[in-house]
Amino acid sequence: MPPSDHAGSRQDSLFSLGDLLNEPASGPGHEPGPAPGPWSGAPAREPGSGRTAPGPAAARLLDVREIHAEPEAAASPRGRQVLARFPRARLVEVDSHWRVPHLHGNEGNVERWVRVKTETLVLGVRKTLTTRPNGRSADWIAPGASNGCAMACAYCYVPRRKGYANPITVFTNIDRIVAHLDRHIAGQGSKPEPNQCDPDAWVYDVGENGDCSVDALICDNTADLIHAFRSWPTAKASFATKFVNRDLLRLDPRGRTRVRFSVMPPEDSRLLDIRCSPVAERIAAAGDFLEAGYEVHFNLSPVVLRPGWEAAWTELLRHMDDVLPPAVKAQAAAEVILLTHNRGLHEVNLGWHPRAEELLWRPDVQQAKQSQNGGSNVRYRTGVKGPAVRRLRELIAAHAPWLTLRYAF
Image 1 (cartoon, one colour):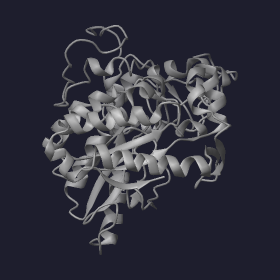
Image 2: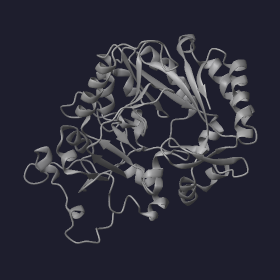
Image 3: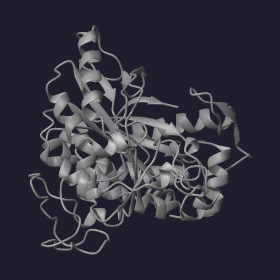
Image 4: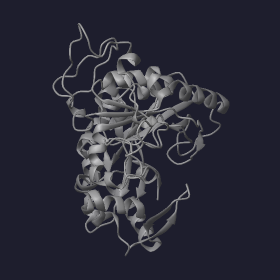
């Protein structure tokens, strides 16, 4: 990372890692650790944590070399855990996790899109704790414990706000997030009647702007949320994921966390779901997650309309029907979401992955759409989208009739 243009600015200052961790960084008796680089070989036990560090599956996702941190975040217990997990990363103080010099707003980072996600983390304190109503896959959107992702899905909406870079930002005040949820859940009482989200429990989406499975490679935020929901009999956590993290199988969710594996035809995924687990691996993991105590649902999204899309989705649905255990089918539900895109993201993608835009940017069949958050997006035209939704419903009924559809749009 280049130095700041302003000598002596706060962003130039570096934390003393040894001071933060109460360990000497150098000097007599100090044994140098391994050279920086991705994890390899068997998972390593983290000193004093009782947990294993991420194994080889994480090597392609995270090789953290820079951590930009708000002072309060770095000094917190969760911040210290992250710093201990990446002891060779350069630590840079920043005023705000939303304003990182040379990261956010730097157009040159488009060419380093995946490298930034691999090598950079941001630590911040979540200032606003708000739970918003949803009513689609969840009753409520919880304040997330992260923002951004190490994966690089070409259609992801989160980068639109972050300006040419979208690494993971970890919010270290997880205790406040859990306390906020405790108060909110208590205030709701029991769910008065069933709805499409769940027949009995209030469902809280805890991963709106990130992937909780990937976050669990970095720190215990995901584990803390899963453990907290075990104690709330009127609520369930829910998050969508495209990464199979088998460490989550050890967390004993006791039916209070719903994992939604996002799937699409593999040929689309190979082009659009950059750095994600293969679709077949996500589907194959469903039985193990159910057996480990998770509720397992699916996201059929995004549905990208292109020549051959019906045949591709038919093949995917038949594969799911062939390989999923009866127990998974008996409790599975799904949502279907057709692609929504954005001109700003289109311009970013042209700088690092233009082939994806051959599928995603289709002005001939797309129209302007105002998002719920006020953004200006594009979606398939009414005369195109409606028939496609009906056709996909027909395919599901024919090839995966056990799959309950929560909604399709």
